[in-house]
Length: 324
Ligand code: PBG
Image (cartoon, rainbow, N blue to C red; front, side, top):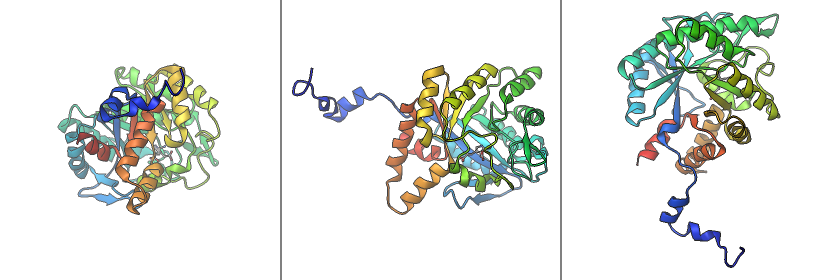
């Protein structure tokens, strides 16, 4: 059948019909809120390149989480801004550091809020790379045992899910093994499986103070030109025991989200990264776009592309908008 008998506008005629044929729905349950936690007290440092985002000390973090909980966001992901850094990222596995203390107090106060932790070394190393460095190179196998220790320290502190973001080969297998050996075989791994060497991470590196002091991350993160390789990365992570796989960034990689969903039918997380957030903030602060409708359209788009969950700095805003 063709026009004039077939008219697709019939199903767009009014709100009731549009609601009935709507294919995807964005829900508060889809959202994961990233938070930066640091040492000290009474600290709430604004991140200049990310309006509305702060580095919190643990006491201030708890206050921020009150709202997260009130608006029923199911999960937060924590990034550490530690009190000290060294060449091998020792503060990443220090039980007295910010992330570990935050896990403990959040779980005490909000037992049913899911706490996810970012497992990487870049926030804790003085050179800012995601692994152990020797002669200017990021070493793969030497990094794995450090990542195991970071993951264990987070789970010991109470983390519900660990999210390794380092892009070392064999990282999921190593972390799964380390957790299982200590009886944490029920702790899921959300793997940053297809993580690209993206310029959209710029503002995050201000927030986490984690810019590499030399070189870049292209020897471990993926080339933005590649799509097939993302499928291989995700395949390996699933084989190694990943429970949730991630595509990061999200906006420029919607095709990858769709391919991963179609290929594996696994829970897929999309990371709507810092640069994506800051672009929208800047444009809306200038009055050039309407923040609310643009953000909801974008997040809806990630769902349509195949994401089951979305890590976004807009999570709290979106949860508020969705609750009305
Ligand atoms: C750590 C990590 C990064 C992000 C999440 N985990 C930074 C990086 O790889 O440089 C970026 C998140 C964002 O831009 O919002 N490896």
